Length: 277
Image (tube, rainbow, N blue to C red; front, top):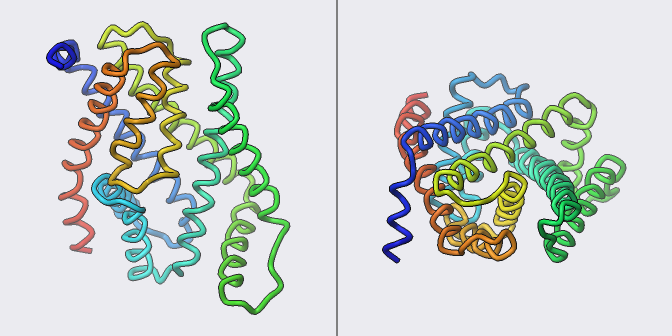
């Protein structure tokens, strides 16, 4: 559609610079998250940040969590981090991410409902189910442990033990929750900037709804960077927020294009330093 692509002329250079800054800020938040979980390994700050950059790039170009496999391999090779503890730290990070995302999504949907904008019972039920599920994992994780000699159940015990270690530090839990809240707002802000540049009549709460919906793509991460899955969720949201599907798809592709350029720029620098190390 020629008209859709003609809308690209509305995007301002200053907006692109703001989005690049926010993407870098999100990478910084991711770095702080894993730095706080793995601080006992005493990674160099620059090394940890560059490792996060490489992992983010691999997430963009590979499917099925290959970026996490690289990170696990690197930490095992250099710091002898047990694979089980790595995957457990990743698992519990996702628990916190989805718990916070579900909570914020429900609060946002409730606000939208009471302001008579719109309401999606299906989406509300999905996030309510996620909130209850992850709250149950939160609570049960530090009260439960298998008494067994089965090697697979012992690995689950290791995952639970890692959670015990994390839960002992209440400030760490609060810190991680705050970081993930900031990250969700960052990605919502990126979308909002693009909507404003394209002169779309939409408020931040509606954009926040779209942003939280896209988090569900993590569950179906079977394509590199969840490509087309995230875009499909955006288009699904278009009818609910009353935005043309073509505009929604254009915004999703613009966001992905800018993110790809940033990560491609950081990739060779980060890779060179880590190999040199």
